[in-house]
Image (cartoon, rainbow, N blue to C red):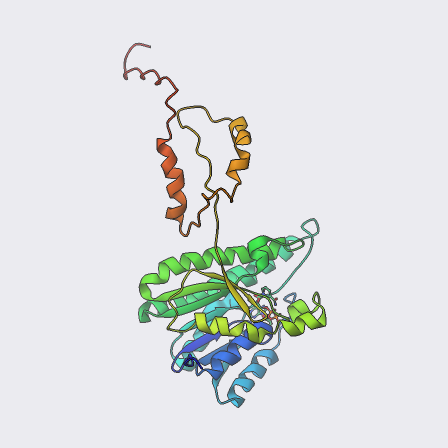
Length: 320
Ligand code: NAI
């Protein structure tokens, strides 16, 4: 058996931990020795209502198993209050799992501003607010592990989820920037795209799929990413049913046009098959904005030789 990854002395905040995935993450951190802040507003899947009991029940479960936990009933939109609960109860914060979420699925035609705003607020702004409140503490202690929750929908899109997919994609980009800004202070930031049978998905999944996609299959990846031994940062991982994989961007080799000739839409059309070809052996996997820009920059010098040099511009002040 591999050595157990322990979290003794570490403080973990798990948001939306009263149900589903968050509950599984919180129970696992508690079992492995972390002091856990079980945050949950206790809303319905659409963000309606609020009650203390989901968070309180998970706290009781962790304590009954011999672990340490406190409840936080604030919304993730009040991230400073969530983090304050950790500081008051345990004096520090080492790990954040931003997991709280709601759905307001509707076709884009029928989606209201409220459907859009609520989903952005809980997912993207909530993730930002909790991370923002913990950030100065993590910088100061030169230690932090943040695991944010996106969705396959945030990577690939999905019918009826324009609001949710946009918020979830925002979380990926947000995490990748925090990974860069946190690196020097040993703050490691990753994103998971889980699949799990929870109350959120029970309405759209058949019962046998809910059973096959237990949240307990996702929590171990979250614990691994949250451990001090993990140096992987800025990663996106699809996970579920006991399967885990890393996702990355791939870019075609691209087509560079001469910079000393007018570039016309017809030139793009003529080269379209090459522009979108991933299979000519020239595709790459950019991992940074600098990396991405290097191909653009390389084309600065793409000068066609069959063009007569432009007439020298007249010296300033010379007669026209
Ligand atoms: P769930 O509905 O079982 O649990 C979400 C929890 O978040 C609930 O207990 C709810 O009370 C809490 N919550 C909602 N708004 C909150 C707020 N403002 N502040 C604090 N807590 C709040 O959902 P599930 O399935 O466990 O989802 C967890 C996360 O995983 C979500 O971010 C979801 O979008 C994401 N996800 C889940 C997938 C799945 O297959 N279950 C697929 C892809 C992503």
